[in-house]
Image (cartoon, rainbow, N blue to C red; front, side, top):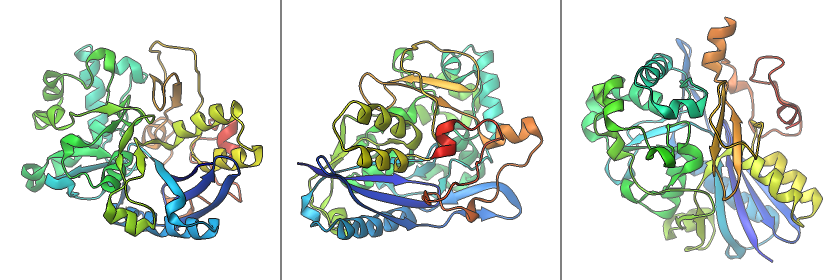
Amino acid sequence: MAVVAGVDFGTLSVRVSIVDSERGMLASAVSEYPLHRKREDPEYATQSHGDHMRALATATRDAVKQADISGDQVQAIALDTTGSSVIPVGQDLQPLGEYYLWCDHRAKGEADEITAAAHREKLEAIEWCGGVYSSEWGFSKLLHWLRHNPDQRGNFASAFEHCDMVAATLCGIADPKKVKRSICAMGHKWLWNAKLGGLPPEEFLVKVDPLLAGVRGKLDGEYATSEHIAGTLSPFWAEKLGLTAGIPVPVGAFDAQRRRHLNLHYRNHALPESGARRLRRGAGKRASPANWNRSRPFRGRRHLHRHCGARGYRCRLAQQGAGELSRRTNRPAPNDMGQRRSHDFGESQPSRRHPGMESPEHRAG
């Protein structure tokens, strides 16, 4: 018997589930955090790293209490998050601002510039994300931050996806170079591809904007899938969460891909069906169509990235950013996130997608 904690960061809250390898789901708890919007800028959507970590501590302690177990019985803690939710950091991994949340679309112009430069320079990586770079993805958000925060550029040490930042924080890692980065998170959203040498070349990034000079090196480090360990829970965060220091923290991932991996895994393993259903429902909100057999790039607003979460799995993620959709349909990007609770699974939630674009899993989730 093994008891583990699964963490799912949503848009407005974090859910922590305590799962027993034999009995299935024991309990889960939710803690909310604010989403920062600006009435004068509907594209603006940020969140605080501190708010995320405080909510995680609350939800973890509540879940352990509801499961009627002691914290030292939890043998590992794994997590997924939304993405791209990007945060720039300085030395010692100190945030230089808030997360550009996945639904922040201020970087529409930057995304268009990256798309144009990628086709002009014949960057092969663009073909692995449907030929169009999105305002929801990493480089566009980072470039927007660099352009609009000139006073912070000298302090910039690196930028991280939410799942990697949380894992590093839990493990007490303070050196950006020692943080393991999720291949799931860094794939198409940062144009990372192992066969193409990792991230796009420095010369390409500089052609997009000289402000990106040196950024490739600052994003360097070990890239890994979620079957690898990011580190072990630090004594500081063990006390905050009510768990035991030294338990493993696997490399993080994105919620939509994590859900697909759970669907595949629990169809083939002996976890009780009732527990499997709850895990599949709770592990990710934005369900993604998956195709496990293709291994080549293809056109359209879909992405295929091998090993996006675990060995031997291929995950195709539907990508239709609200900003891009609003330009195509002349509809405003959703601005009612504050009215939704991301983990209120008891009732069906209004879809964020254009009618007819939802997958059956999204409607049912």
